[in-house]
Image (cartoon, rainbow, N blue to C red; front, side, top):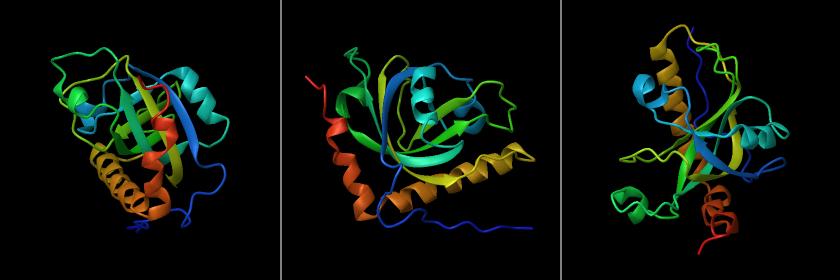
Length: 177
């Protein structure tokens, strides 16, 4: 049985509890995003997850993200050239049933190819909507296929004017020197 999903989710403008703004340090995750799935993620600290979990249920979300890497690494061309740039993102919040996690995680896939990891950097996220609940999968291929569909849904949903304007939100400009 094949179920089709909408390619755009959410109302024409974000409604409560959105937008949800959070920031936290990028921490080491389970090491599956890049290696096993081919879809790298920036994992948020437990403190950031606690803040987010007060407002929403587990599942897949979309919005905007920014990496603030203040270590001024001259070899990190990506972060120098794209300093403070805002990118579209999808985020998995929950237990990752396919992997049977015992610890809840918030894994942000920033829709951009980076040349390096950015552990320890500050990640700022504005969550604007809900894509779908988390679910278990019968195979790794089915999981990867659904994640790629989530990415398409996020890009289509963010393309609306009322969502697109959040990439210029003051939250992404504050505390910059």
